[in-house]
Length: 239
Image 1 (cartoon, rainbow, N blue to C red):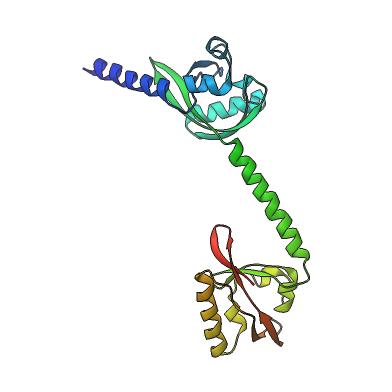
Image 2 (image 1 turned 45 degrees about the vertical axis):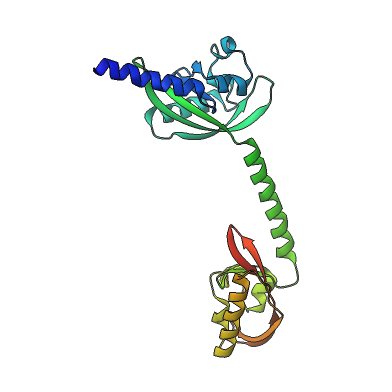
């Protein structure tokens, strides 16, 4: 019965492995030799099956052989099972892949079962977004107009010009504080709360004058208006 159960388990794994839409590999952990690959992997990498199964993973992975060997050892020991690698296809194109690799026993032999996900487009989109945010930050940092971003009334970002308005030596002195921390009038606090609720409904606010008490104790009359934005995945307000 145990042998029958083992055979049935291996058959289920073999069926899943062969028919799965994600590229999958079985790799020898010590040498990196590719022992088996499903049809999706053959299509993804672009090699014919005989050629592919005569290769090692280090011929595909564009990291150094020493680095690839270290990552295989991590997967074999179970210390780490998720990796991001540059993999070269038969065409010469290099794709960024996310690999989940787990040690398993197949017919008494210990192998690495690796599932490959192509994340090239996602990584490129993330890099474009990072560059866009960096350009925005450089523009805002150098802007002469005070600009701040808050989430639920708490300052998450403020440029140097904005920090100066609050009498701060650096933006870090203001970040984490509430705008109401600089207000002494209850009526103004209530008005700011009303505007906060308006922003949460996705509506911009009209210009509003209020008196603040700066960090250096000086009182100053300022005019503010805010628009709803998204900041790091959260609903926020730019003021």
